[in-house]
Length: 555
Image 1 (cartoon, rainbow, N blue to C red):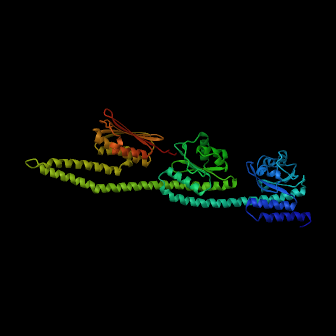
Image 2: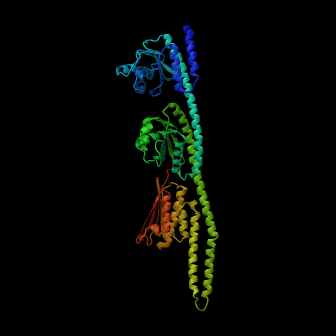
Image 3: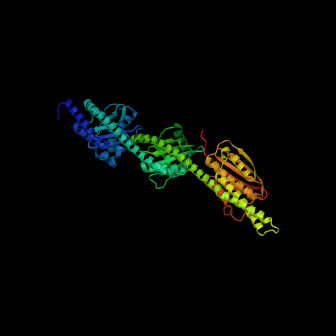
């Protein structure tokens, strides 16, 4: 080993530099470097604190600690505070300095945690990369109470090398994690594309997204929160610690304000541990299961017709948090695009259903409708021939009944064809029903309040319900007039069909058991998320009221 002091320092720096370049794994590298530094400088003990932006610290490496600092699984190195960490937090530690005495060793002596090996003082060196402060390097030896300027300068030079290597490793780990997360993003997108056709609505889509995120990432908690009708609701949530998905409907005011902040920012937001605990409690998740990771991110989504927020609990290190946050930005774009694809799929399904109904209507018109028309004409001709005889033929009355029944069946068939192919909705729901009522021999008076538009699915559902209600008026009410009212509010549509006929609600059996038409009307209303009520009286007639919730209209 060189004897000259300058050569000794150069040899030390060269050896440390070579050691730093042997690994990209932080903890083993630091253990090796600290051991090599102590060997070259004649010191015996050293440790490294990594200190985050918030001031939290952790001991990421130690070498040959005295038994007093190994007490209770190194509790003195994990808990409490000391002068060197406080100076670092306050920004007063710019260069390598002598610490008069070590508070952790003082506490160990006071509480009799074990042998300190006659170590009372240490040198403290800040670890940095450029202007970025990373942590502290502390070194000591038994009976050594002072470090010379030359020793501190050498430790400072070594600390610069260690800080630069730590930053390089941080960037390397971040790139590795980013590459891994983007690979997972590709797998997630492919899986979501395959399952998209199985989703029938936005709620199915939300459950699928959260389930796949839980499968493809290590995030212990994921939730999808949607804003509908100006209220935030958790559509679905998933926790890796629990087998079943979590689902709640109500968001408390404190959490609502937090999520509104995310929505208004239009970008990913970092959530604190306390904010993450709030969300987990809303979902019924044990708080302890989120405290271990601590950090989380929330990012706004823009599904068609609504606003949503994706919340995910991420890693405990800021490095992983930043790379995961990047991935969440990309995830938001993929999920929003998938929502748009689902909307297009739903439209395609609706067009397919319309085409099928139109095909069925054409087939009925070209086959059954023509047969019934021919049967009516044939019965009429036979009735005329039989009625022309001197003595009334016994079959004449039967032919009259056949002609009457065929004409009634023809009328029903034309009404069915009209229901299958709702021509006229282009001019509006009420106009179409008014025209339909006229074709059934009814005078229909319509009334509308509210100016908002109806989604196609709701408009068609009310059209079908209105048709069946008018058919019942024609068949059972023994009147030729009906009133239809459509009330459009911010959150719901109220649709009422009323007549002043003889009524018909006083049945011994429930309505669905006696009336297939009424049962179908109720099913249609329920399929739209609403309800149907029927009130009937022999004095006031019959009123059919349908209430359907409406999606929010975005400005």
